[in-house]
Length: 83
Image (cartoon, rainbow, N blue to C red; front, top):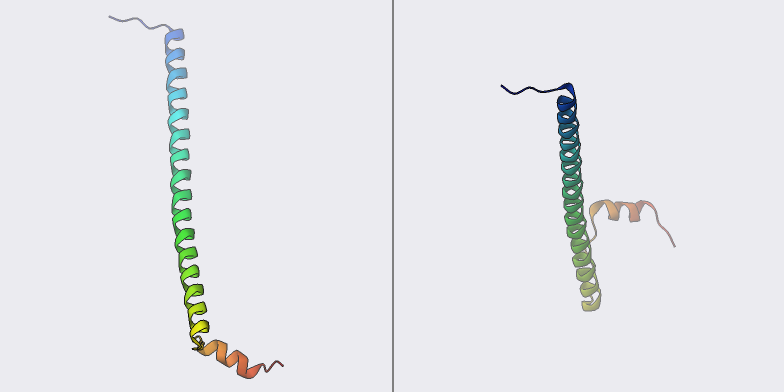
């Protein structure tokens, strides 16, 4: 039968602790990368939509057609006459 000394068990505990710490660190790093990737994709989509809206607005100005105004913006302009 195998005989283990306390020193062998302590070394095993050290190896297991290092492996657990390494895997936890690796998991945390993967989660951070995934969150950054998702945030980057959503920011890129938001920028793309903003750019498309700006391009449409410029095309409407060049064609001479006024851009659409939302009802809330229209109410603001009517209630707050500015020179």
